Length: 117
Image 1 (tube, rainbow, N blue to C red):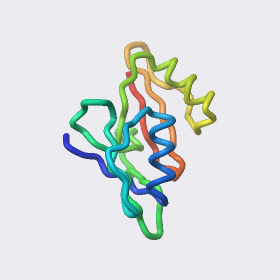
Image 2 (tube, rainbow, N blue to C red):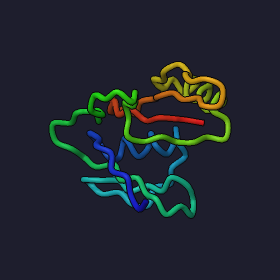
Image 3 (cartoon, one colour):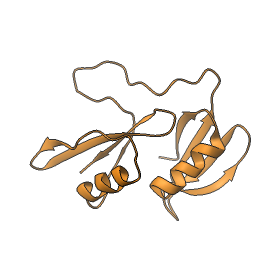
Image 4 (cartoon, one colour):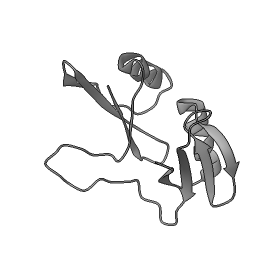
């Protein structure tokens, strides 16, 4: 995957959050968007795009139980959850059973982002 596009109110403010909270690397920034790599050397970029009349991403209602577009896979989901809570990020409790665990957290613009392991 080359790129992921996320609607935001202020690309500069959002880029700082994605850098501080998720460790993304800023590639470049302009008034209308910030382009970030999810990790050094990664091909996939996340493009934070300024939107007019901003509304957080909302996944359509479904019977599969998914409510977000993107999932991140940490090395340790419990540690990732703890770190986000310490940073006072809005996170849901860890759900799942046995082999599958997951939770949702929200960026400053209310966009839901997932974590699964």
